[in-house]
Amino acid sequence: MSRQESSQSFSTVPLERRLVELTILYEVGRALQATLDEEKALYTILVGVTAGRGLAFNRAFILLVDPEQERLRGEIAIGPSSPEEAAAIWHELREKHQTLGDLLRAVDRSTVRKDLRVNEIVAQISIPLQASAHPLIRIMQSHEASLAQGGVFQPHGLPVDESLAQLLGTNAFAVAPLYLADENLGLLLADNAITGAPIDPPRLKMLQIYAQEASASLENTRLYRELMNRIEACENANRVLRESQYFQLQAERLSTIGRMAATLAHEIRTPLVSIGGFARRLLRSTAADDPRREEMQIIVAEVSRLERLVEEVLGYSKISKPECSLTDINDLILSVLLTMQTEFERASVRLVHELDPGLPKASVDQAQLRQALMNLIANSLEAMPSGGTLTVSTTFETDFLEIGISDTGIGIAEENWHRVFTPFFTTKASGTGLGLPVVSQIIDNHNGSLRFESSRGRGTSFHVRLAFDPGRHVATADPPSIAPSQEQNS
Amino acid sequence: MRTILIVDDDKNLRRLYRAEMEAEGYRVMVAENGREASEMVAKEVPDLVILDIRMPEMDGLEAMARILREHGDVPIILNTAYSCYQDNFLTWAAEAYIIKSADLEPLKKKVKETLSQGAGGP
Image (tube, rainbow over all chains, first blue to last red; front, side, top):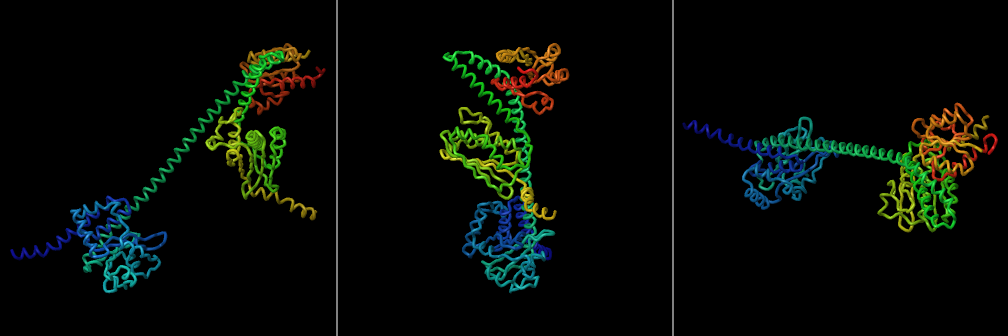
């Protein structure tokens, strides 16, 4: 009987202890499994190490491998900075939470505080991974927990780094590697710096087992984060796809509208000829003093306006792929200006051109670009009803050239900036609202860009940017320097 | 007196063109489509043809081919609402390609020009 009792009491102690240990691991494991947020996981690990119902260390520190910086760095820590603070914290927590599980579940963002003094300590730890002689690096790589005591890490037999002991304020602490099969994640460091209680081998062993649980959960959060990143990438790709489908639909819709507009425009042309043609006939056969002449003139003028509209709609829907040839843009500009000379005079607009004589040739559809320039210039002239100055300039950079057309006209109201290139938008009584859309379409066709700046009452500047092939520029510039030497040879 | 054949499927246009061309001093014949036009030319060859392109039964391009096959020297002015046919090489055989407009002056000018180039003068 007594033998049985003694054997029972002999085995109950380790059994109870083991049960407690298993409970701790179970509770922490459960809490960690429910955590996919990395910071919360780290904090949960630390709470498990320091909770009275957990591993009951005073303080705990996590050091993580930073693969980018190739360093082992202090990440986060928990623990009081004095015995008084320790008593206060643990009392409060014990009041609130009955079990370790409760306590761990209570860990949320609000409890993840980084302002504790221990975090100032942990932030100072940063060891290059290449420092292979450093005891902490060696312990991490050994995948075995170690106890620092009396200036030596045991069982590793490594000397304790003096500066580390000083930083921690104790030379007695436990270190457990955080690792996966093929990857070192960091170190879990724990001590009893406040109470000075000794760390016994079973507690070190417990820390090692605990560290493995923690490693697995850290890996989970990392995998989860990667998964999230991939999901986000997929979602982004999906969104881009949806958007491009939308734009395609939009483009198809627009091209359908374009075809309908073209058909309609053609159909309208014939009756317009009848209306306008007969109106002109009537006008011609009406006496000069007949009051009805004015009304007939209105019909004639309105038909002319409609015919212009039809012309522009058809022109707009017709703009097709440009047929490009290498073109001297300055020459093209000068010829456009020449054909518009009478319009400049009529509008009493002074013309200034600042054309860079070294401008490289560019591959453009001459007819289309001519149309675009004429539209831009006509637009500028209309913006200067009482005269002004029109400046046409060309400049170039390494791989693009820019045509600038600036007027000193009325400017474009800011509320209309976004609609300037929208077909049929116009602020002019006689405009069709297709001038600038045509320009935009043409420049688009050339893979160029078109932008403008405008201020009310001061004027508007349009900038057409066109790419050119720098190689070709060199090729066209070279022959004059080669030609003389060829002559000498022959 | 020079004779002009006007071919257009639009009744009002035929009336307008007839009035305008007669006022210019020409004798005018009209046809409603390409088939009628080629039949008329077979009976009487005009000095000039003003030819629409899009018409029912036989379009202007086919009619032009028939007329030119029989009477290669009849000048034909294509007069259409469509500019796209200019890309069609068949239209190059025409004397001129004029887009329809309420302003008939360009057409009249072209008619006058063409007839003054032709044999015999106006």
